[in-house]
Image (cartoon, rainbow, N blue to C red; front, side):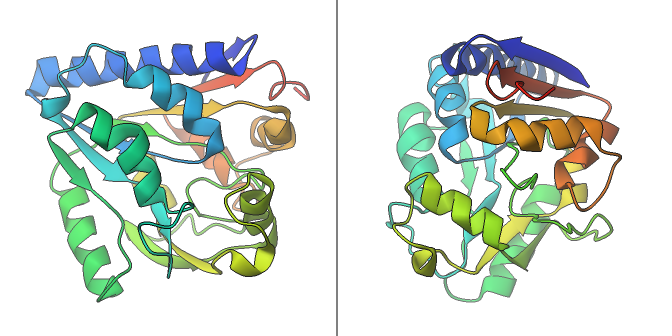
Length: 241
């Protein structure tokens, strides 16, 4: 685990993007392509904005989507597919994109997406940490045992409250109760993991991640077992360390 604490969220985003870009370039140089996983949410704004300005051969990058709400159309303002399309895909045009989709036969979609994920190693996982300590939509208690790549999960109240507080939904009633998420062991299979975690609302989750033993009740603690995990914080999110 390597921790970097910046003065501001913008500085954090720039530093995290530089690290991610370096790993992408290394993978392209070594293998001719790079396979990455991207997370979403308000906390990733600065990192993604900085990343798309990096000098990278994006046509050689294959992107996997981390999670998506069940039952939410892709054009909904809170859809993570829309988020990635607008903030990343339409701006850098990666060579290949794998979205999480629930429409039609969701179980078949999960199988096909999982097969694509398993087809070759993943170079970089950009993995945020939620206010409840979740990674992707693996809310506590997270399933650290499953070998599934993606699965359908129920979202806990704190996770759903975060979506309202961030302005994606106007009330709890609007937040879907379920989602399709990448599973913890699949996340851990990424060769490198970079977590950009700004803002004071994440300070408790950051403290719990660092101070707690590895436990499904704080899913992000699993990241501490990864051999190459980079945690980027700002002064606010690091405030309780």
